[in-house]
Length: 163
Image (cartoon, rainbow, N blue to C red; front, top):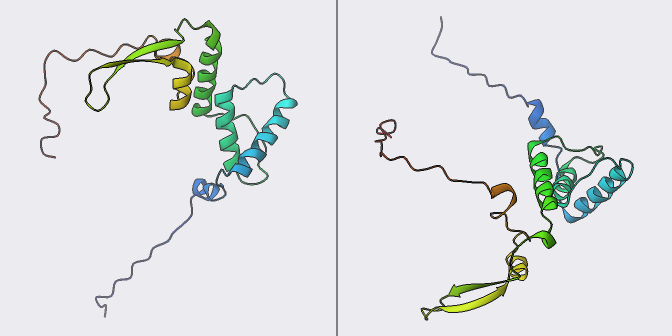
């Protein structure tokens, strides 16, 4: 006789890529400092490798997260290449070559008052706000950006009517 007994068996296995993630560490201040020293040593033996400030900072963070004893190697990731591109854009347009006025005047209203004209030192304002020291919209990456035009005709969204 067979009864209504049903046994379900579940097996759990650790994927290899998840097992490697378990060895990653937090990027603490001390680990970042150690990673910076390791990268300095690595680069001192390889003068042909040039890394800018932005890419270097990213490299230090990712190296600090690696498990202890991981050998230093130049990252081969899309993010690192993007950081290198940002460094190249910044190097191609150094601050002293920028045709930007040192001071800019902005119209401001404080607590509903009439408009006041305030003049700011652009570089100091960027530093206070934590912005890059260059105009990313005026030159470099975004200088040729043109938003795509809106369509002339509004089309009804029939794909998501049942959602």
